[in-house]
Each structure stands twice: as structure tokens, then as C-alpha cells.
Image (cartoon, rainbow, N blue to C red; front, side, top):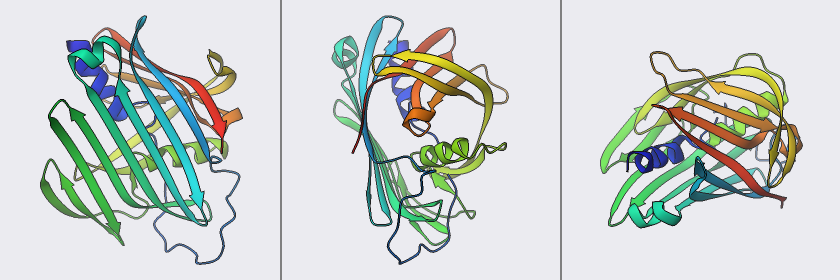
Length: 246
């Protein structure tokens, strides 16, 4: 049961809770998608502990003019589904201005049997207005703050541009947190979707033994092809199974 709880925690940070800057007013001109941002795509991932599959994650990114919509849906499978019935929906949408990602709306909904935990926010100017677990918030946020999902697009952009500093303000659960990442070289990763040359990136955490490492592949615009999360001796991995440009 402990591993199932950790599974649900990983899905909240999991394969794609990575990260980007921007907060200026978006251009009203027709937008041509910069090559530094990921192309529109659809992908599937497997989440597993050891040899046991815990769940499947479906991810998609779409553009309409200068607007983006990034969606993730995770569903427990097998014994994890029998024990928990966990389903997680995470959506973010917003506008693009040059290489800036400007989130407008964010939703995280984790349902478990008859219970739900919801975090939803609307970004209006320099404020985040919303609620977490039915507790409302209205918070002033720094310029360039991202939500947990849009951060992935930002990290992909910054890895593509070979930026040395990977530090971000991220708004989640009514609070502003800082995420930092460290590059750890390149590795070749074999997956059901193919073999990828990937940049290895580690989440920097102080005062904890938890470890999360991402492998971001140039071939698919520096999106993750593998995530490894280690906590209290247990390892949960998320690996890409399918990728398709839209």
C-alpha cells in the first residue's frame, strides 16, 4: 500500500511536472510556433515500480494561433487500480509570446474512489486566483511564474537553448515554490518508442533523500522519455511507449 501512495505522489510531480517563464502581454499578431518550443504531439507513458505496472499516462500538446493547450491524464491499472482507483487529470492553457509561455488557466484533479483533490487557478496579470481543496486563494505572483504543467514546456525550451541556469518560480497549491534542475550529461535511453539520445537532468532538492531524474530527448523536442523517482529505497519509473507529432 505504501508504494501505491508513492505512486500517486509521483504522478503529481511525475513525468511531466516540469517547467517555463513569461508573463508579458501576448502579441495579438498571428503566431508562428518557435522551434525552441515542443511541436504539437500526443504521447503515452508507462508508470511502473520494479516489474509491476502501476498506471498509464497520456499527454498531448496542441496549438491554436498563439494559444496552447497542454493536457495530461493518468489512470492506475492492474492491482493499483483495484486498491486505489486513482485517476489524475492535469491541464494548462495559455498564450505564447515569442518564446515566453504565459499560463492562463490550470487544473489538477486527483480522484480516488469517491474522493477528489482539486487545485485550480486562473492567472490574471500578476495574480493567481483559485482554490486548493476548496480553500480559496488570491496570490500576487512574480513575473514569469509558471504552473506545474507549463513548466515542462519552459524546461524543454531552455534545454534546447542550452541555458546554464535552470531555476523557476512555480505556483502550486496556492503557494509559490522554486524549482531548480542540474544537467548531468547525456545518455542513450532505450524505450518501447525507440532509442533516444537524451540530456539527463536532476531535480535539485536540499534536506531530503528523495531523488528525481529526467531524461529529455532532443529528437522529441526535449520532452521526457524516462523519469526515475527514488524515495525510501523504492524506485518508480515512467517510460515513453508512444510518441506522435500532431
